[in-house]
Image 1 (tube, rainbow, N blue to C red):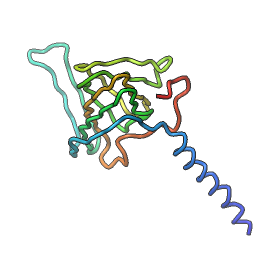
Image 2 (image 1 turned 60 degrees about the horizontal axis):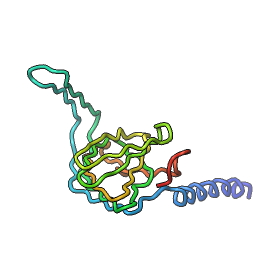
Image 3 (image 1 turned 180 degrees about the vertical axis):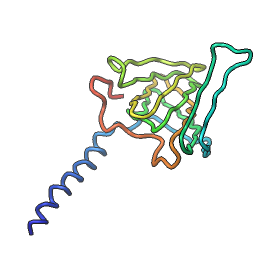
Image 4 (image 1 turned 60 degrees about the vertical axis):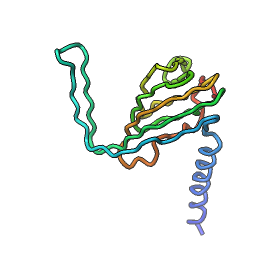
Length: 166
């Protein structure tokens, strides 16, 4: 009988965690995402520079295999991706309209607006961000994540303190 009373709080805590994760998450709205390509990459050990030598230099190294994605994200007017992170980095190309990228680690969740032809980097990991578009916009994201990651997108459980809801 005593063991039943010990299990009850654990079950309750798990139920609360599931409830909180589903009700407090910051879901997207006005967003459609299409995976245009997905490939698996062996370990990357790239060391590149221009010839003749200049200040431009690239180092890219992974340990283990990666899943690579090319994703087309279309935001309707007023649309948002919701607050989220990714298990790896993303190169973001704005191909139509404009989007504002809000980052939780910037003072006041600083928003920077990018227009068609602009690009920016989302570092991934525990870096939480949200895209919003006032008049509509489209991005193409090139993402690298550890092979077999359960998801290439991780919804934030809540809106970061002091940040816009979306």
